[in-house]
Image (cartoon, rainbow, N blue to C red; front, side):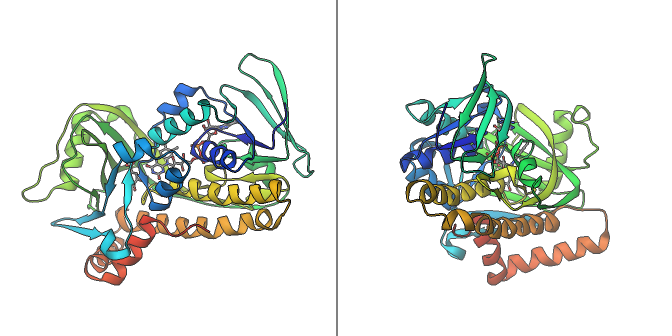
Length: 388
Ligand code: FAD
Ligand code: DHB
């Protein structure tokens, strides 16, 4: 087999990269080790920045997003007794959209299988070879158990945090930065109409809580818990009681309903540099992880592949290496900005049991709720800084 770009991993980064390249006449093959059903059902992010919506729309993937997605014009920041709205259009002229990563993935897979470039599910033993030459290749075993070789000009490592691509880059020298946080998120999906028009980020002495949603009838809620907690110890009643306490506000009530999914997510910041070795380029979670507070993970993956698609089109079509040579530095500038924002949102909202830290957090929340300058800084980062 031969293609121009071998793409490892059919998450949002790999699938969107394949689509953006196809629109510019560059062919690719996407290799995914999981099944289509597994990839489409994985429940993850839910908030799309303005640039992500624009990128998907321009790539012809906006129909269902605009029909079923919900445009949000702000968020609430809460601490006991106060729920304050930040109005994004007023503060920075942008909005965000609620549209689940599951839906983005389904739209991308459908477009790919509807006459797009090849997408092979359930491959195994993916190995990258000769990435320092202009003729790299990928060996893998296909879903029928047959050994295959894919020759290519470039490999895109979009295989997430546990993939095979990042170790190949790091083997030639590089550096990683990591911070693990002393808290985790317990997330639930519930068949309950959201009791709020915008997301609520709530600081509470017992821990952070986030009220999000997926549709007018499905709520997505998160509770800060200790990373050592086991999901079996959290009955639905216990979860709802904790959520009700942390979101409590006079005259307002949470709306409950059957819980359809629940899990505990660890939280870490991680950056791996550089994002390139020879003809192997990393994008998305393969190169970096942010804690979920602030909803940057998926959006950062989309920003990376927007830059990478431009660089690869220029390299393979116009035979100019300038954008490919600067890809890692340009992508990392945005990665570090989002790493800082996600860390600052996480640090401001999660409690550690230290009373001094709690007073600093409340002082910062009050600053954002009373100063247009401080509020605008949050709004600009939350809705997404320009790509490029
Ligand atoms: P992924 O979505 O991880 O895709 C990588 C793909 O590569 C996967 O399909 C994987 O199966 C495949 N793969 C891996 N190894 C191989 C291999 N060897 N060969 C072939 N294929 C391979 N972000 C937010 O903003 N908000 C959230 O609420 C949020 N919640 C999250 C919850 C969880 C449990 C996780 C894990 C992440 C969450 N994120 C969230 C982050 C966000 O989902 C990711 O940033 C986003 O999925 C990144 O996309 P990606 O395509 O880079 O990686
Ligand atoms: C969601 C996740 C986030 O991390 C966030 O900041 C907002 C919303 C969500 O899953 O809906």
